[in-house]
Length: 377
Image (cartoon, rainbow, N blue to C red; front, side):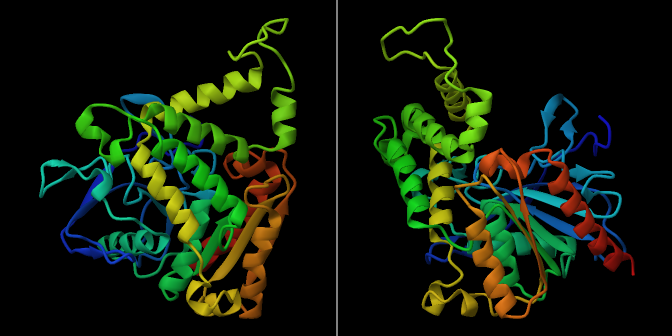
């Protein structure tokens, strides 16, 4: 593949030092699955951390030797000569704690019981993820990231890096995200969770022992989420009111192409993603709020930040609208941080941050070229 990082190998890091979660729960030991691309320079100043969104994972770029079609979820963005240029940067992608792609999560075996953690896995927050990511950085001897980058929930993690470890990140790139969820977004997440929680096969989160999966609930949750990731224009252009056949069937089976698409996406997602992980990820979204300990004041919430920032939004993203991104920009400017802001005209809705878009890629490429020059200086 042109400009690909090529064949990659997932790696696993074991941590024996207990991690205390924001909730007060303690995980005595855990593993993080990760991949790296590019070469870490001598003074370890060219490292970039990629934080994934709700359904993301460590496989950011390249492909596996035995799975050539399993291409990383941001392969269009990360690689030689690409906006996140692995000729210049050492890039780390990881699967967050609570995930279901190799890092310790609800489906992992609890060594104390010999059974999956299930419902006993601690409620995880963005703050907990960043703490575990910092420990992974310590393993590499990385004292400061050139940049931490993420879209959606990943963008929230990038923001949290600037607050939890202001001296350890020079640039934060927060894409298609928000400083905190609106009531509407929390409501969407709650409906999705309830689809899972009320599935008869959920069994209070311990469905593993019953040999079942709450497929119906997870399927509905993904269908609802997918609607919010697309824009009205994108759905109209791609599907419109097109029928699968030439006439109405006057029933509840699939008739419109958009129905077929959503059910396909729901079935596909439910076949590989863990329901407990979905619950944890959406609650982490709900809880994130840098102003929580500052009486709701984002100016005070972002006062600790020392990084430079690139904030990107997309015009048709109604899940995390440009207005939400400007709520990040304003308190950063109030605190006299260096902030670049780009509002990209796109028809793809929230999913725009994953798409090939010339203006978006140009902005990313230009900003990171400047970051690269800092590293080289």
